[in-house]
Amino acid sequence: MVDGVKPTTRSRRGLALAVAAVLLGTIVVAPGVSGKAGNVLFANQLRGVPTGEAAAADNTSPAPSSQAPVITPARSQTVSVRDTGADTGVVNALIARLDDENADVRRAAASSLGKLKDSRAVPGLIGALKDRDAKVRATAAEALAEFEDARSIAPLADLLSDQSTEVKQSALEALSHFDDNLPSVPIIHLLTDPDEDVRQNAAHLSGKLHDRSATGALAKLVGDPSANVRQAAIEAIGELGDPAAAVALVPALSDADPNVREQALSAIEELKAPIAEATLISLMRDRDPNVREKAAQLAGERSIVGAVPTLRRMLEDPNPDVRESVVSALGNIADSAAYDALRAALMSKDAKVRRAAAEALGERRP
Image (cartoon, rainbow, N blue to C red; front, side, top):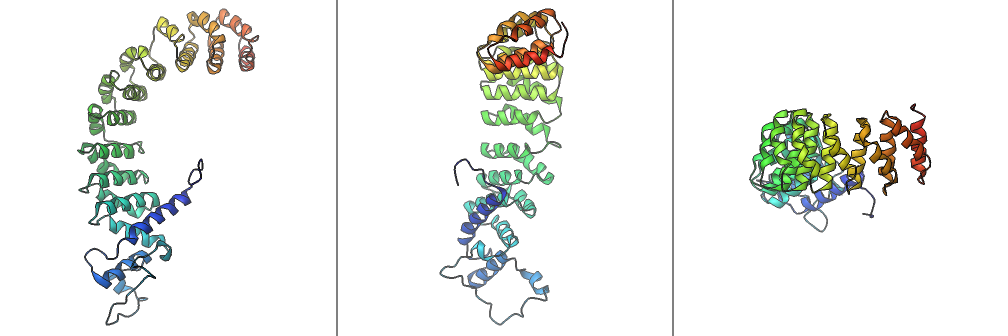
């Protein structure tokens, strides 16, 4: 693959078929069938030829001979995907490999089925969620994420109580592809999981539950040892839209991690929750530019007159994005001091600030 080039859907399917070729090329007999007859049956699966009773009912099938025909691929006892001529045979053969005696084969089959995205694979992949091998279960969950098939929601939810951390992670990731009918109880339970990544992903998913019963558990995570977990929990609190949860966000405004502080401001904005003016002005002087920008934006949205002197000084902020946000904030504050600050911004050394100030002045009166 050329660096920087994103694989297309066609190339992903081609890759999956190539993987299938390697996978299927290691198998010379079908389950429960041995010898030459096994070779014939498996090759027919690849070619999409009906087997068993279906083959007998097919009037186009040749009359059976006294001896089963033997298909011998040139120079090896393997069948190339290129020789099948149809994806159908490959998909059916891969589905059959989900029951292979070898766990690595089962995992490879599940992975390729996810890449091929043929909906006929969904029932088989759902069955693979109960595989005795944890890596196979995890891979099957990852493959099902590609389909976003509602039939897989309940089986994936069952994996949230799996003993394997990898399996729980894969199930959470797969469930994140759905917006409705998510299982609240097991997701909320994972907010207290010992694994940091599981807690983080469970927090992200909790924001999609439309279930405010998750708010209490999320509020506890605002003090989690992991900054990533704290940020995910705060984001979810904002998404759930319960204003009563805003009190849990106050400590996060002074969090050691700037991403957490910024996320707390975003959640307060989303919840339309109150914030002390002194606290907001203090955050406008934060050492992190993203926090300063968000605080300035919030001050403008709420038309906080007391923030104007600080906003005026911020017109000289070293960060250009902060300076632009400051002009926008001043334009939203209905006060003569804000108007004067905008006039002063017309003399800024930054052309973007001068342009933004000119636009803002045209939309208001002193």
